[in-house]
Image (cartoon, rainbow over all chains, first blue to last red; front, side, top):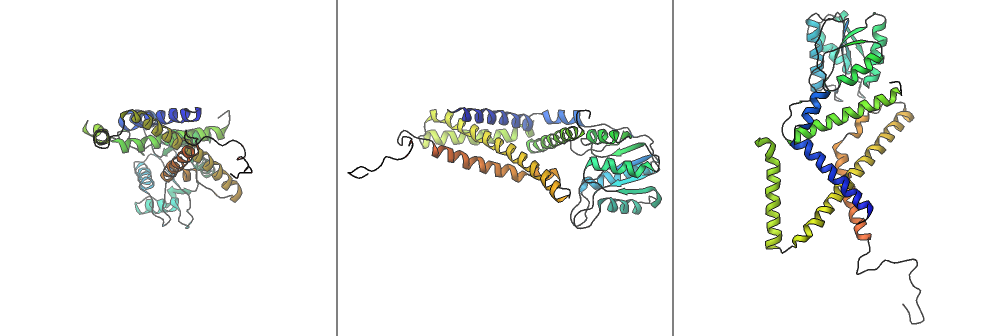
Amino acid sequence: MSRGAAALRLLGGATLAGVALCAFTPLPNAACRRMAVAGAPRPAQAIVVLGSDMSREGMLSASSLRRALHGILLYRRGLAPRLVFLGPRVASGHSQSEARAALALECGIPPAAILTGEGWTTREEAEGVKALLAARDARTILLVTGALHMGRARWLFERAGFEVIPAPLPDASCESAGAEARLGLAMSLLQEMLARAYNRALAGPRG
Amino acid sequence: MIEEMFIPAVAATTTAIGCWLAVRRLGWARRSLGPALGKALEWVGAVVAFCLLNAAVGAVLILAARAVSGRFVSMYLGADLTLIALSALQALVFQWWRETSLPTAATPPRRGRPPAAGPDGP
C-alpha cells in the first residue's frame, strides 16, 4: 500500500470516527451548551437586533422574525428607549431592516424609537451601529442575536466600543436528539468556530 | 435510547444480512472483506481531501470576487451540502482512475517509449 493510500485511510478512519461521535453521542450537545451565551437582559440605551436571512421576495426567515419579535418584546418591557433593526438590502431591492421596522410599527412601537441600518456581516453591522448611535451617545446596548452567534457578535461590538448586554435567543437546539439533528448541530458549531477564527484573523495579532 | 440506537441498528442489520448473502449464497471470500473496508476508508479520506480543497478554493474565489466586483459575496455561499456530494463524486472518479492506472501482475508497467518494431515487425 502506498503512503498516499495509507494517509487517505487514516483520514477516512478519523473522519468516520468523528462523524460517529457527532451523530451517536451527546458530544455536539455538550459543545453547543459550552458555546452558547446565556443572557440576563437589563436596562440599556438601545436594543440592537442583528440581521439574519431574507428571501428574494422580501420574506423574513424564521430566525429574522424571531430576533425582530424578541427585540420588540424587550422594547415593550421598557428596557431601552431605542430599537435598532439591522439587515441588508437583497438584490431584488427588499430591505430586511425596513421589513422588520414595518413589523415593529404594526406592533405599536413609536416611529421615533426605531432606527434601521444595513450590513452584510456582523463586523459591518458593528461599524454601522457605531456610526448610527454615536450621535445619540448610546454606548450600552442590549444585543439580540442567536445564542451561538452571540459570542462572536459581542466580541465585535465590544471592539466597536460598546458595552454589550447579551439578549440571546436559541438559534440551534443544544438538546438535539437523533443522528441527523446532531450532525446538523455539529455543522452549525463548526461553521461558527470557523467564522470566529476568520474574524480573529481579520483583527490581526492584537485582536 | 431507542432514538439513539435506531439508525445504527438498521445499518448493523442490513450489514449482517449482506454479509450472510455474500458468503453463503454468492460465495465471496471472507478474507476480502478487510481490503474492501480499507478501500472504503480510502474513499472516505479522498472525499474529505476534496471537501477541504473545494472549501479552500471556494473561499479564495469568494474573496477574489469581493475584491474584483466590489460587491459583497457571502462566505456562506461555500457552505452548501451539494459540495459534499460533488466531493464524493470527485473522490470516486479519482479513486477508480488511480486503480485502473496502477500496474497489475498481468500487465507489467511500460517504461519509456515502446520498443521499436524490428525487421520482423511488432
